[in-house]
Length: 422
Image 1 (cartoon, one colour):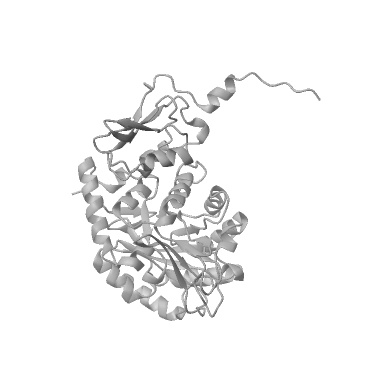
Image 2: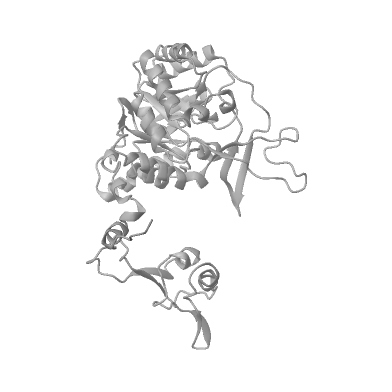
């Protein structure tokens, strides 16, 4: 059986599955139940000056029968006294010395405030701190959270303050509410960050009740923008994790967060450069015991692939991510339809006709109209393959032999320079 244990900047964990800083890590008794269920680590719900939360603080996005494809929250950091949290952190780490206990922090932008809370956490015996530079609502209006993470100079400055005050590993949690994730990631590293975690939640308004015309979640007839998470954000998170994993100016371990619900999701984050993964929404939906399937699934995957350790796959797919200009323009695929499996739903025809390249006409065959691909016109966009409800009915088949790759960068370098007159 493959070894799932990881070493994340000196923080040892029996597996890469951690709970993210959120309601499931609100108190010691909860985290201890999670460890008993099999979680390798947990990031304590963010500590700082205790706040007062509102009622009606969550909103969900459903797609057909699938509940909570996305989750919006307007909940803030801990509303429990700091001394109570610190006591429970100390007790939890003492009872579970082999599990990773990380503490999320967020205080006002004063060196003294960050120094004080970092030292208090170090005294508990916790394994590390995570600086919450990502919360997009409530705290950001107070000059904290994403208000900090969206300004690289602030990210660097506060990270350096914490590094002055503690010997614990410092993880910086980044906000996705930026146009480019690299500048804040690099800034955190310049400030001394030992690792990065991402993504935090995405700014969102969840929807509107069409009867009352009140947006969700409804707080006495009003709402506020909140943080969006859940399975729907996974592609955004994977992109940002891979961007930092392949950035030569970053070069520190990454804890991946965003839409992780199964072992397969976790494996994708690991392949794209994460050493650990953090889970929140899936636990809020299904409970702590989902980690059992995650552990079994990842173990079986590694065994089937012949790997002895989870560390063998970390970052294995990073080299497969590149800039568009480096993609092979001569790579050619077309769609082919297996008519023995076709149920004549004609979704491929409609999708191609109205949403793509009009290359799947309906053709009379043995008294029945079937969709048939005009391969000369097919551009290999994959749309028909994606909408087809029958597994294996439509395949994307490669036509080129790969002997003459050509990138846009190469093509543009061959073009004669265009001279323009003044």
